[in-house]
Length: 246
Image 1 (cartoon, rainbow, N blue to C red):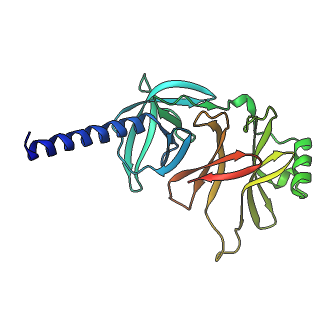
Image 2: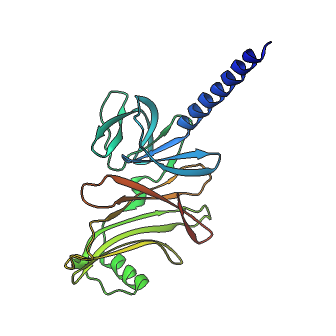
Image 3: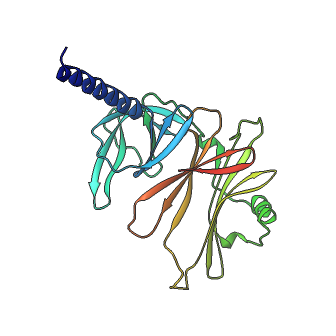
């Protein structure tokens, strides 16, 4: 075989490997909301932003802790491409908290039975004690708590999102209550101070075992300002420590 023929064969082999790897990655991709995705390689999660057009792709999508078969579609606007899931009957799935994956991934998702959005007096008292605050029910703007054994230690933890107002300051706090308070993030905004006020928004979306390692990841929605797309940040919790997946 001449030199040119060998080069052609090598290039063909490289092309096949690249195509195979891209196919493998697409089957191991997690799609969150509209603009974020994560690739699972083994047990490692790599978060990337979605900037690519997606031709109709078969996926698993998740709702209320249950898995459904569906398809991913994409649309384009001024912010670039965003995607949404449709069922096999071409019915659009709510994209606000969309969680979908390539067909190779079978994730575990915390169901609605583990989620509480009603803040009673007893729970408010506990939060005040944990955070050393003196909030009344009229201070609370939003609340969400997800109770589950997220670190596989046979004991439930509480992942808590709370948005509250004191005077002219609105605070968003997301933390884990696991014997003590483990902070995930805290964001304060004085909405009367124009020079320092912000339109940034955070919200606790869901808790899911993305890479099937028995530890559940915490997914937080983030909007960086008005007219900006929603991105999703992923946090892992293990041995009492929080780590953001980037």
